[in-house]
Length: 302
Image 1 (tube, rainbow, N blue to C red):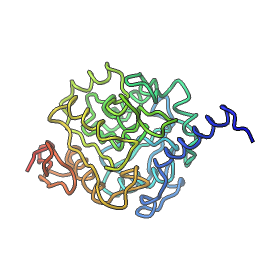
Image 2 (image 1 turned 90 degrees about the horizontal axis):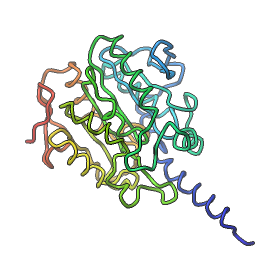
Image 3 (image 1 turned 180 degrees about the vertical axis):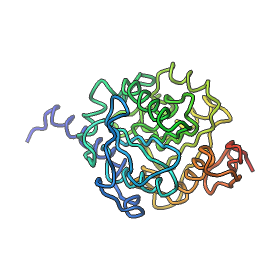
Image 4 (image 1 turned 90 degrees about the vertical axis):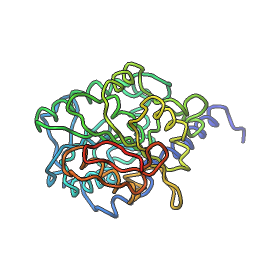
């Protein structure tokens, strides 16, 4: 049977999206913190996006941005794990339905719309306008500092959302920009952050130490991207680059690594005032050396 060009491209595109399914291909967070959508409630007073909140959570506010497949059970389980560490966790629904874990659907609901620029080296993603409003309303409601966690598709978004009242930022396996036909970032995309230059310039104005995570073998989040983060934000980034087995993609959710989660929790607790003690990191490195988060919430190489 003759294989037409259209059939070939459709097959290649499907294979690429299947690879991007690594965003939540496993369920280690669900194993750690079994959860159900019924444990979350929809908050109608936080602006232009639906926002779910873990019912039993209390403490400093965290905004958790979900991955490409959607607001999956793996992401909800991560929210529960974070709530058990002493945080009130908010999850804006960026596209699709709560509980969704559909890679093809997620791509077309995000990257194939005008809301997310998934391939440009420095294109703006209009969804950030609505996320800024949501974060602002959470800051107003809580009257304190908040933390923001981005993952996969939203991995670099915390930098674009920095403002007064944001005191912690965690960048998990930032995946944009990528070429879906090649299954990964290619060429200049490997070093790009997928943020508009104006967003990067705004982020530079806030002297906020942040944490970035990736698996070393993850082709969706190449090491060159972390090098760009170090260059663009000198002296501000501690990196967790996970080696050994098992490898994966979703560092804190579907492919949750316990040591990485522990480091992220300590960083968030210190930055958001739940801990006043210096703590040595298990995996994080600052200036390519083992490090600690000081009692003032700064990185210090050891």
